Length: 215
Ligand code: B1M
Image (cartoon, rainbow, N blue to C red; front, side, top):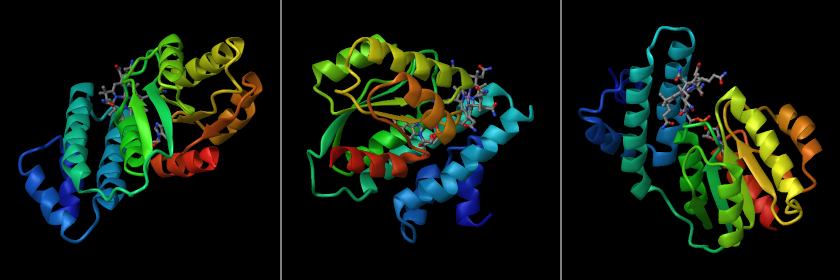
């Protein structure tokens, strides 16, 4: 297979032998972020489709996810970071009950490389922990990720909780993850939160929104 098809195939097949060499070869012609966006994420999309239609079993999805993570870790040191730093601080977490973190970690990478300080709390984080961290670290923004449909409900509960705690004015919220939709965020979620609620379709929109929030 040609290089980029082979790379995409590696994600789908969960095949890491020779991955580093292929990535190094790919970086000779394409910047790392573009490799992630156009090649690796396309592989993850296929994995999602195969899993969703019952053609792929969970352990293999996990293998694909591991290869994806290894690939991103390999590419990250080669990404261009901007010189500006200290643009703002975000506490980032995958919500309670949800283990998906590839997207969240990409958001971390993109924001960190573009002047933001990211406090990445990891997966399955209850809102109390997220709020504690946000207050403790004096975050400017709270970011929540979740991929399960269930997580969209958790996000709504979380926003209601933050509102009840009276911190809505203090913390604009950035939300993302495959199960969310713009209309759900803009209609159902803004309803329960007195502060700003932003929906990011992908990590780049997350960056654009952070820039918007912080100006
Ligand atoms: Co899961 N899983 N999974 N899974 N998994 C999905 C989400 C699913 C859609 C697959 C499917 O059925 N087609 C489905 C959810 C269905 C639903 O809720 N209706 C599903 C399921 C069912 C499950 C389990 C329940 C399976 C089971 O146990 N029977 C289980 C859940 C466990 C739990 O959470 N409690 C499970 C487990 C797993 C693995 C562990 C095997 C693995 C995750 C490994 C890991 O993350 N460390 C996994 C994977 C890999 C997937 C799919 C295939 C791929 C997800 C992914 O990494 N995508 C996924 C299918 C899919 O999403 N279509 C699926 C790539 C990633 C870069 O995209 O995270 O969307 P994403 O992030 C994007 C944007 O959304 C956005 O930016 C990112 C990049 O630009 N973004 C943000 C995300 N967060 C953001 C935050 C922001 C801003 C932007 O600001 C704060």
